[in-house]
Length: 177
Image (cartoon, rainbow, N blue to C red):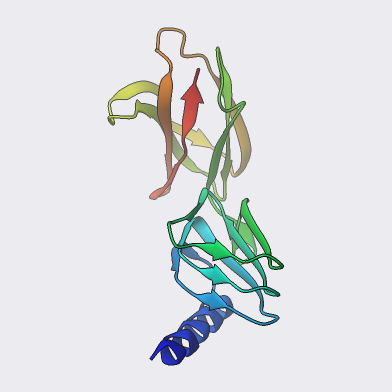
């Protein structure tokens, strides 16, 4: 039974690699022998995989890569997890990040728009309450944009910037300390 599940998992991986990257990807595979894999998702990867001794595996996602309990990269394997832009049809997708993160007084919110559109950008606290509306229906051109955020009246904690344009949404996480 385990061999059948392993074979089915490998087939699913090969199918995913042949298609365009998905928005999110949940991976529960066992990479063995001299497997060399690149698993990509536009937004997030969540994994409980096992990476064997001589396997070479990379997970790349635009916003987060999470290894859940049960994830195992054995000694001798090569494993790399990156939060890095993933492209769809050769074009970068909607991206959102902030630096520095964590920050004390201000942070620069950096975002990439794959097409022109009306941009909305707001920030919520960890409970979902809007603490700042930074852009509202602002026409912006495709490309890279930066916006400095100075939340002087907010306490230390976790904040969630949310970017919406052309019926797409990108979410990030920043920490004020």
